[in-house]
Amino acid sequence: MNAYRGYGITIPLDRVPLHEQRSWIEDLAAAGYTDAWSAETDGTDAFTPLALTSQWAPSLRLGTAIVPAFTRGPALIAQSAASLASAAPGRFVLGLGTSSDVIVSRWNGIAFDEPYKRMRDTLRFVRAALTGEKVTETYDTFSIRGFRLTAVPSEPVPILVAALREGMLNLAGREGDGAIINWLSADDVARVAPIVQAHGDDKEIVARIFVVPSEDAETVRAQGRFAIAAYLNVPVYRAFHEWLGRGPQLQGMWDAWAAGDRAKALELIPDEVVDALIVHGSPEQCRAHIQRYVDNGVTTPALAVLGMAGVDVRTASLELVPR
Image (tube, rainbow, N blue to C red; front, side):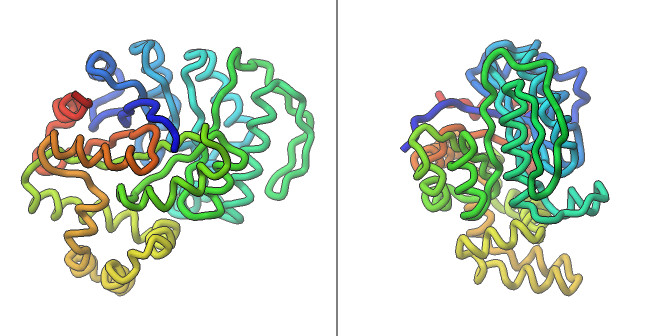
């Protein structure tokens, strides 16, 4: 099993403007976080918060979780990765993923075609481009003619693959430096991580873990159902949870959602599903639950602290650092 590598936090925090977050980031680094991981859905892009953090907190390792393989051209992904690596030498990890049909097609107007091949091809191209070699290659999903990156990173940039099911998990282990996993329980990790680790005991497993340090379980469950429904009705996440064996627990929710009855869909998400996918309770209980992810194969927890049940995200983030 891979060794524990660090304790990460998802940035930017809450809905505070980026220019006001310097003291937040400095406090997180001082408290003991080792990593800062960005996301890219419908808020900030993946790179800008990390560029700021690279200067505000020089001790933190920085990672994207994730940059979609579809929404930027392959050469631009390589350029952006090289720029971050130059700002934070030896401290940047590029997390790539397919994202979802919602983000790629509905929000960006790009066809979500052959996601596995697009991810594989982007990984192969970016890996080659970051070495500075001139790339002329016809991949299955795009062609590159004579691209050479002129700002080559001084140190290698690890590339992690966002992965749900076996195909992408194997790609993460076989051709990537590890995997980024998301929206799964601590017990699910015991099924997912070995697929990646079968390709080498040096493979990293980063898990985004949703955390609400509140003992108001009823409110957390009620509010958490909205987040779960928003994600688990996306086709890629539905297929993931069917593969994990959660289909019988979620079929009622999926049926009601498809019928347009959103309220009924939320009601039909069982408490045990919320409790499995969203870590909640006292800070001590949350830390113990997060440790179960590590025990089952996660090398780097990347906490996403949710401001549910009246939780103050800044305070809660500091309370969740391991004692």
